[in-house]
Structure formats: C-alpha cells, structure tokens
Image (tube, rainbow, N blue to C red; front, side):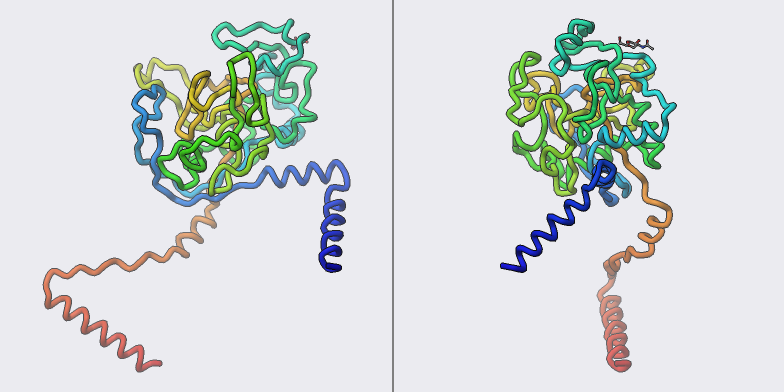
Length: 351
Ligand SMILES: *[C@@H]1O[C@H](CO)[C@@H](O)[C@H](O)[C@H]1NC(C)=O
C-alpha cells in the first residue's frame, strides 16, 4: 500500500514538474502533435462499392503505396502558430485576400451582421478578416483552440507548412491507406458500423442546429475522440477536411477543360453520416477544391518519405523467403532430395 501511495505521489510530482510553465505546456503539445506513424509498402483497395457515387469513389480498385510516414494528428493551431513565428513574413492566402469562408453558427451576432451570406452554400458567410488565428472573424482568437486543427489554410498554405517542416502533403492514396488501418473495403477506419463517439459530424437539421450527439459543434480538439483505427491515426474522419497532393477531376467532363483542383479527404463537422446534408462521411469519400480555397472546415496533415539511410537499411534487413523449388521430372526431385540429405549430413558432421 505504502509503495502504491509513494508511486502515486511521484507520478503527481513529475506531472507537476512537467507542466511548470506555459513554455513547457507548449513543448509538451508540440512533441505530442508532431508524432508520426510509419506505414509499410502495401497494396490496398481504394474506394467504395457504391455505383451511385459520382465523385470518383467508385469503383473499388487496387492501388499501391510505398513505405511513408504520416502525421498521427491533423496540424493543430499550436503547430501553425510555431510556423507563423518562424516565418513571420509568410502571408496565408486568407490573409492576402483578407477574407475566408466561415460557418455562420460560430460567429457572433455582430460579426454575422457584417458578413455576406454565401448564396450557393447555406449557412456559410464570406467574412472579411477571417484567417487561421481569427477563425470566426476579426474579433475571434485561437487562444482556446490550440489543440483544434488549423483552418482557413489553402492547399498552397498547407504545402508551405509541410515544406517548412521538412515534410510534404500525403497523396490521396497514402491518406486513405493510413485511414483504413489495414481494414480493406470497410466504410470507416474502425469497421463497418457507424459509431457516434468516434468522430465529429453534423447531427440534426442543417444549417439550423447541430444537436451535438458527438459532443461537438464546429471544430473539436484533434484528440477529442480515441484513435480511429489500428494504426493509431486520430481524426481522419470528421472535424475538418484535409488537403492531399493529388489532383481532382470530375469523371464526366474532359480533363483538359477542368480547373486545377486538389483532393480533400475525411469530411467535416457540417457533413453527415448518411449524406442527408452535405457529404456522406466515409473513408472513401473525397472532394476537390481549387488550391487557393480556404474555409473554417478545411485543414491538413503532413507526410514524409523514408530517408535514404532508412530505405537502404530496410533493403539489407529484408530476407526474402526461399523460392519454392519446382521439379519437372521425378528424377530431378530425387536428385534434389539426395543433395539436401548430403548437406544435412555435412552439417551434422560439422556439429
Ligand atoms: C481586412 O478586413 C478587415 C475587416 O473588415 C478590415 O478591418 C481590414 O482593414 C482589412 N484589411 C485590409 C488590408 O484591407
């Protein structure tokens, strides 16, 4: 009993020491959210077996990914803040044009009255001065949202961040492979059953009221829910859409006539389980946006190639299983067996 109490006190004490001041808290979150997962070479099934899907999820087909690292969490505000401090002259695209798209429910009445509703997207507003550190417009901050995903970042901003971090954006296939967690062909990262406490989606009548059956309206901390799959990936589905480095094309029209767009994956807090409003949230789903587009429900995470040393070390370490020996004639088989027996005899002799 005494040992238990002492251990407990020691743990409390070290926890206290760990979070002594603001910088320590920041460092703790930096190291936590910068964690990456290494995924091996693989072939997997992309897409969903739903012929009614119009945006390229159908048909299911096999694709290959080479070993890569991917961020366990989406990039949080705390990380984007570090980028901003390291690159004070970098202007995000939302800062350049001095506006971004914000979902109305997260704005003050004052801000709402000064913002232009989006005609094509009910519930959304074009907000002057909305940017990553003022996510709901000029008078908002990210002070309380440090572990939430960074939003109002364009493809170009996401690209700039990942380059600065010595990383890159994941391809669509890498993203989807990481999300599937080894469960090929299933709807969600954890299986085929919808579970409301695994991701942040829209519940209720859109855009009037998110009933928050999952506890959250708007963005949530990237670790508000447990890891979504066996690879330990967090927040792949729900919360915010994530940029990938893959080009998006509509299937119906000639590719050459289409504007430049990149694939986004994962769905967001305005998307739904069944697609009653906005997008159906499932691992296969995808959409395309132009590289300058920013909004309060789009973020990103980074990926990374293995270093040359790592790749070489792996080549050396991999021992190929022996090839099965095929014999065309019975006599060959007997010959082979005899030789093996001889070899075994020699080995015994040497022992
Ligand atoms: C950006 O928009 C805000 C909010 O309307 C405004 O106060 C500010 O002056 C604008 N900045 C520029 C550079 O136009």
